[in-house]
Each structure stands twice: as structure tokens, then as C-alpha cells.
Length: 277
Picture 1 (cartoon, rainbow, N blue to C red):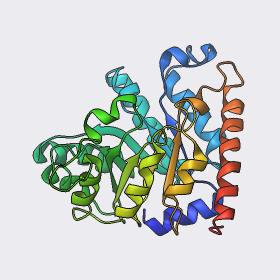
Picture 2: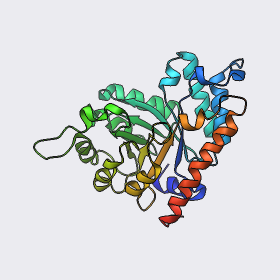
Picture 3: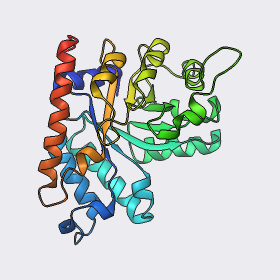
């Protein structure tokens, strides 16, 4: 998928929403637990209810890997279902992988060739040769962690380089810019830390940013848009728990749609005000 195709979907849906499929078996509505594959049935209902409001879905792999082989099966079935029924949707494997080149090649094949996801989240901590294997897959995207949305992000990401005055996350963006391009690489910048969006945008004006932390984590969509929008939107804003667990009864899919619709309407207004739609 190209940046232009992503932007076209944003304009068409008037949305830059990503729905995170952090599907936890203990939170799935009880009536689904008797199904052969409760996690897949839950995901399927969420996807069907929100596909016209979202440009992306992001399964967090931890919620699938915890179940071993059966969880992996649920994940593969979910990706195949989205690809078959809603092929325009951008699918992000939220794996946060980071390993040496030979291992990275296997991870890249797993998510891009075997599973056919469009993107994968990757830690840049090991440097260029741990990221390059992902960038060799044409039409696929590597999403590097820059500013994460968790509370202890500052332990390392705000460490200052005394030689340059840059913070670590700024060095990550600066150095990695030459590994790929704005057509195959994005950066994670958490909505919970909006004060750092301007720095990332200054360094990477053309790149898409994956933005977790809106919703249950308390991030502000308005603040993200104020600092993060570019001429083709350049944002993919994720909400997981705030959408998929809006209701735990038989009405869960409708409730998820209502939550997604609320965010989509806010996004449509932001895009209109920026004259992007």
C-alpha cells in the first residue's frame, strides 16, 4: 500500500482511525465463549461494525501469542477475514520486534509473506541491520518506536545526547530516516506525550505517524492533530480498549461502532478544518 492509497482512504472515510484488536479472552462477551474460536468471532464482529469508520486495524500480537497455537490461528483467521472482505484496510501487526538481522528476516517473512500484514511495529534499539530486513518487502511498512505512550517512556527515550543536545527519540528519527523512506517507514508517537510531536514532525515532515494512547490512556486527539497533521494527514490514530470494550454484552459490536463513530466525526472535523477533505 502506498502513501497515496492511505491518504485516499483517509479522504474517502473522512477518518484516520485505527482500531486496535487487543482481544483479551477474559473481556470477551460471555455468549461468545461457547464458540469454536471466541477471539476470532469477537474480532469479526468488531471489524464488521467499524470497517467503514476505520482505515486500519491493529492486532496486538501478545493477546494472541498468549494462547499458543490456537491464538496464532485466531490471528491468522482475523487477518484473512479482513483481507478478503475489506481489502482497502491497512493491517498493522503490533509485534514490537527487535533482533539481529537473521532473526529479523524471519520475522519479516512471518508478518509480510506468511500472514500478509501491511505493516509491523519494530524496536530500533539494535540499529540499522535489525530493521533493514523489514524494509526489503515491497509495498510493506516498518513502524519504528520513537515516543511510546507508556508512563516510563522517559527512562530512555528522553535521554540527552550530550554531543548534539538531541534526545534519544530524536536521534532514532534522524538516523533511521536514511534506512527507508516515507513510503515504507512510519514512527510511533504516543498521544499521551503531545509535547514531542513538533520535534518529530520537524525531523520527519512527510512520514506517517502511528499514534497510540487516544481513549483509555487519555491522549487528546485535538492536541495530536495540532502538531502532527501534514499535507496528506500523516496520522494513523489508534484506539483499542476504548472501542472494543465499550460494552461487554450482546450489544458489544453496536457499542464499539458508536465509540468509533464518535472519533471518526471528530477526525472529519479536523480534516475539514485543515482543508484535507
